[in-house]
Length: 542
Image (cartoon, rainbow, N blue to C red; front, top):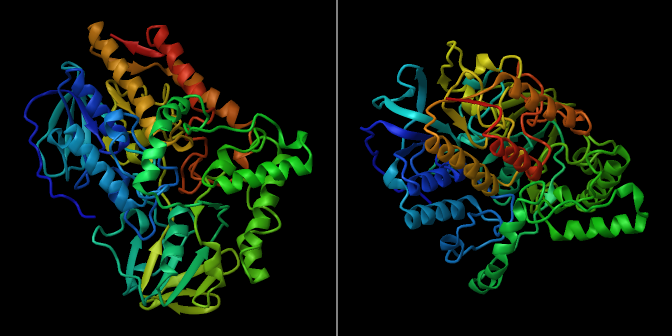
């Protein structure tokens, strides 16, 4: 798929709301705010709609959520769109967003190829002036930034990288025109979701694939399935119930945890449940597992042991299998977001694929021809860097939003993130954010979060309009209460035992903390309703 070559739309009038980001969240808000009569416009750095699915075009890039729940719940969309796979790839996701755009006439109110550089608040006028690279300033009463949790790719500082003469790409910045891997010597650095996907795809036709692993990925079987028009027609009557169930489940999916503890059932019952979840595929073995899996170490050990047996059965070389699934878990199962794989473990049975354990054999430096480790130099034509993102906060801290006291988000959050309800921070009046820090975000199905949190923000805008309120700002006390709620719950789980992007530990100098709201979507929605029912308590409104 290629971008459709949208031209930039001019923004000449002062806006009620300026939206940033054309992913699930931003597009949903644009549609809803426009319906309710707001002067609203959206800007995005990409060439087309889709957000992460505009940028995610690396080989093997694919959704990790089942198609029936990874779409908008608006009937005019799901009643018509035809899915080709249970877990769509990036090309199908781009096609889906093009369909949504055409059906809802969104892009007429979007300016593409526009990256926000800075924004300043004018207290007297009660409005933001937003400056973008290569464009005139935009004035808006409210700004809603929907930048996602993967807006800022992170690449470690490899010594000598500037000397490398081959192709070098971060998976989050993959060329839109694609990269040919067939017949080439490919290195994949990192084994997160994109590393797993690139490695298994490259192994199909690359001359060699070398996977540099720091921490084993406790990846789960996707259980992919091709879909026919008949499959789509059969599933459609079930979708309303699935959409309704989303708000009742921890992760915003249409399934939830088993309401039992793994330690309270027999081994036979436990393994029977594990087998059923495993065969169902996707995140079922993670977010549909026993309710005590991420709270109780014994329960967690049972889940990990089952997972490890599944992996060892698929890898022929016992030494390689042990590196991929060691006897001692690298971290508690489920405390890092699992990736979904299709044939990842089988690639290590191929003669053209090699696994390098970076804890035993770290990368020393790059040369013109490739990478040097303690075992010597390895030559590569293409290096795919799958080293993740400055997750959750990186989108906001990379823009120079200026608070009322002259600080940007990076400075404001130097000692940890502070928000109220995961949508606003003190010092940034009339600046709201969706799918961002201290919201369900990384623990929630994306389209679910886009709609539920989108409704929260749109309802909030309606409330202020009805009450003739022109200024909103998070209260410091409410921020500390929200932060304490998150930290208190986090400490009761096994999540702190993992080095994960959930806590920002992958970014040098970043405060280690839960960047998401980890208590689940139903609890989040209850907290939002509590605030709304009390006149949006926790916000200073005037």
